[in-house]
Image (cartoon, rainbow, N blue to C red; front, side):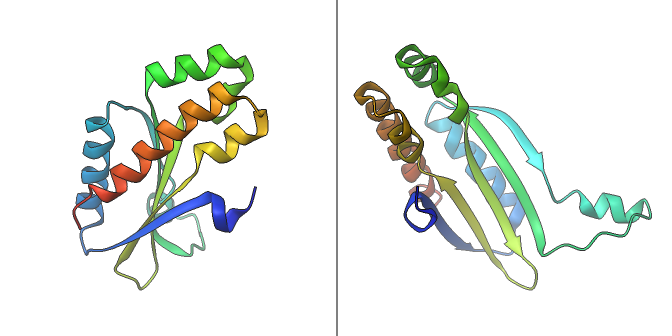
Length: 140
């Protein structure tokens, strides 16, 4: 894997992080994916309010996990170990002192290449296309 080739990223200029996050979740669902979890890494602010000293290098950071149950079934039917890269994830973050919101994901085909199985690569290619289309449909 090559991090510069296998991670897809886009930037969106907005002052409304939560609105962009909501739009992303809506688009993911529109492509027939289920949101399995949203990890709120930026809950550091809550920790500070509790008196815990924390140093951070970002304003916001979320990990959105999603899964298309049909694709997942196809992947694990081809190789039961393929579940190691499911569900797929988008990271959504905003650096300190920036208005740009970044959305990145690791290409599913990068993981599928590890297995060297054509049925896995076919499904991973479809998932990757969906993820790219989600970012293109964001409309910002």
